[in-house]
Image (cartoon, rainbow, N blue to C red):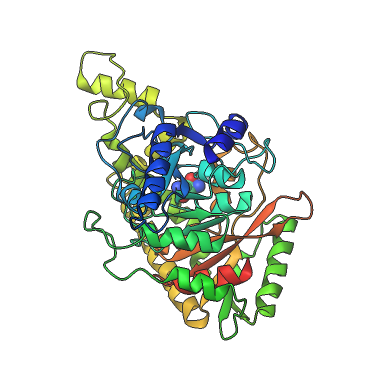
Length: 452
Ligand code: GLN
């Protein structure tokens, strides 16, 4: 049914870069056989899923939305991919994304943009717009995204779906093609909080193949979501981050947030105001740290090891330059240049070193805030889905989409976006962001499930 739905709507939505029809049908048939034989099934056996095209898959291409990886077939499955398969999940295909996960609209994909199913002339968010759009268009009930600065949560907000960025180290990065390694985190996307929780427990947990993976038990998020669904938040303190409510929010987003606070109070939560004074520097720090890591990580695309090779010139260096020139899009090039500049000798202390200090101050802001509140809340994104083309030539306007989501990544704590109604002026979905301390996903899911 989901493959039929994809055939019906994906010509317009363009959520998928690759649909693995045969493998999907083979897995469905396998689950049928297991059912007939009475064999024990995986926890989500046969449930279809859309996988962001940044996780390696041995049976499908992995492009990261880039021409430089066109035609590349990874020799191995990412840990997340392997865990999905072990749970019996049917992977329908790979979803569209901004090139190497840099962007907030999926317009930086080398394979053309994804369209928001709510209004095909608008963006589905990014970088994981394909995964979010697949959910909103009912092409898949579950999806996987990655969140470096908001790429799971902002697409969830603008498509009326649920997206979770787990604690840094909560989900393995093995086989997740790196954007910025100290910020990247894979996570579940779904249409309900309970569905996200079920998927979370499948993909999370320690992985010896990822040196930053946390060797601790996975928070019991399914149980927490079930408790939350009973609708009682009494005894919980919800902190409103003063600095994430300032300028730049669309009126309907603000109104939806005010209504969300009232609803949380009605559910029994105590709403308190907290201050995180260094959050105003988060965006500046992020756009030094992320490009620095990008410039280093993307050096591996050297025309020798993966995908595209433009055979122009006499030397390896010339071939590499021609390949990178042809294979990378403008946003990726912009960030590589920013990163190499920030890391150059003589500038390191002024830029990268300074940004790392700001990062520590932001973590301290979170610790102080979580001493006063169990979870923190804010609008997920400053606006609803904007028209395709509106910000694609204005990098700063595009970067501002992640104003409220970036601090979470810098500190490594958990965050999620849940639907918070529709904005009055345009009838488009708005998201509520809920943030929790590292490994505090249980309370976050509880609040999310009570709220939705
Ligand atoms: N939109 C942000 C950026 O362009 C976040 C990206 C992400 O989370 N992968 O960097």
